[in-house]
Length: 257
Image (cartoon, rainbow, N blue to C red; front, side):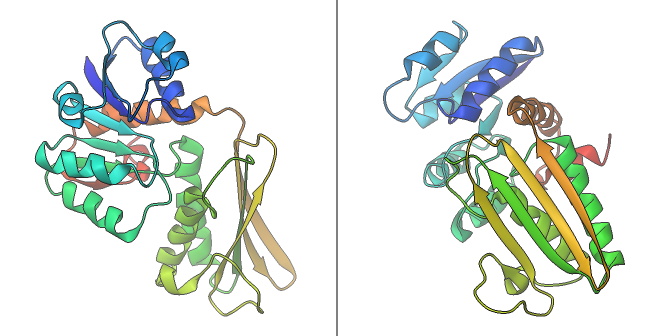
């Protein structure tokens, strides 16, 4: 049985993870970290055996793997604690700054670390496909449009950026130089453009377009239920706990399926 600790359990994804763990007899929700007061709706969901704490050391002492779906400003404190007590880490937190990325990389020298902005199988496959198309259609203009619910805080989404990075790598381009997260001028050569739409309760929709003169190709991924992310995350967690130290992406898991 895998002892899992959730960092960020009171959030929307955290609650879904709790529900999915309870359905899986091979998983145990051994500990939950809460920053302040415990949300009563979360209390009612937790198994009786789950240890709840706002002390990071006690939280880490009771799990074999940490699943993080928190906030960009919360993750650094977890990483600091994990550097003192290294454990495998699966993180789906988006909107990270350069320092946090470096801290994740440093931790991965000691334990397996996987970060993915989207835990679904379909998105993992789409990242591989867009790379192939970007390499094959070298002259095509690439534009990525993502749509999410009105409450999403970061834009472009982490999944959209990952798709852009896959395209840039396939073409041997520096993503930082070709990323056009916003635009108020004419399209530039090699640019990978992004557009963000926010409204309603859309779980997630990503479309990658490859535009040529006289024709274009569009590839789309649509999520119809949020639980797919929690199910995917737990599948990743089971795989990650037995891996060697290193920094992984979700494509590493599905490349073996």
